[in-house]
Image 1 (cartoon, rainbow over the protein chains, first blue to last red):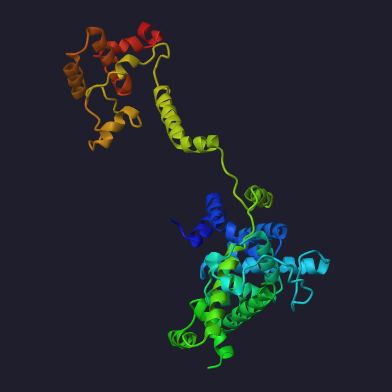
Image 2: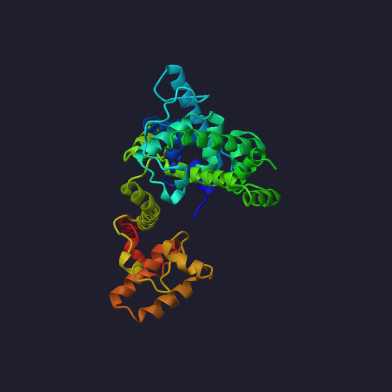
Amino acid sequence: MRTDAELMELYRRGSRDAFEELFARHHRRVIHFCYRMTGDQARAEEAAQEVFLRIARAASTYQPTARFTTWMYTIARRTTLNFLRDEKEDGEKVPIHDNGEGRDAAEGLPLPGPEEWDPERIAWGEQLKEKFVEALQNLPEGHRSAFLLNRAEGLSYDEVATVLNITVQAVKSRIFRAREALLTELSGILK
Amino acid sequence: MECREIREIISAYVDGEASPEEARRVEEHLGSCAQCRSAEKRMRALGVAVTRTEGSVPPDFRESLFARMEAEDLLPKRRSIFVFSVRWAAVPLAAAAAMALYVLSSREAPREFPSPAVGPPRVAREMPGPGTTSPEAGSPFSAPRELAGSPPAVPGKEERKTKVVADGGKLSPEDREIVANLEILEDPDLFDEPQIDEMEIFVPSFRRQG
């Protein structure tokens, strides 16, 4: 099986099949990442399309010095950032909370109690998913990116540091703070 | 160590990013702190929760993206089967056409016959034997002999006659006459040989009368 870097090289030489293979491998995770970053399905689709367009436009400058996925997530993160900024400026619907204010946490959701936080016992319903996505949006963008890239996308601290252009120690700190904030917020709605 | 101080290391430990020394300290602490054990469990649960938080892939996502890419000329268009067929057939077709042209042009090449009224005896050329091989350069029929490594030596008149006679054993009298004429036609020098009777066939009428 060809590596992502080899497929990029083939695409640069004019292979449509190479790009289709790259797309097949990564489009789901790009859409999921964009959804978790923006908290909105329509925006996630739009952003994910933009990610692949940017990958195609930047193919001629791609250097296989780092993993393709690291490069791809760098583009994906910047793209979603642009979307969020544009929406913030336009006053559109996607919530961007920098400090956690303006949240309506407890809405009587049938969520499991603290003793039931066993991952296998959590019934991950749509309501809980919405609350979790909302909690993610309430994180500072830098913390959210670091946490998602590591926990959802499987990048190492080192790779997250590359994507975010920060130190590994800063990654460690951001992920810890993201966890603390999420646990605090979700603990608030637990019965 | 205070719980607050070690929580960040627990977070890295949960992610598999703690150093061996940090891991040892975390495990030691968790063994004696129920609060941090609960915190560690919640941290792990968050990791599971985030992987279950997924967007959906719309069915037309690929088509929509590829249409945009094609509009921006970012995606090479897929060629039709017909184009591929023509492309892959081009080489053998061109080779066959070139061969056909070569054969036709060599057969129909103008020859310096004294009288255009009499054409070359093509029948004889269709049945080449060692003695009937034309020595003229560029003839496609001489090619196999050249490829085989024997240079196309120009035989002498006697040698040619001998070859014709040698092959003549397999030919009918009419064929022999045609073959003899062919030898004469392909070597214009033989036109000056008065002892060859067949030459008269090709002599213009005004010369015969004079």
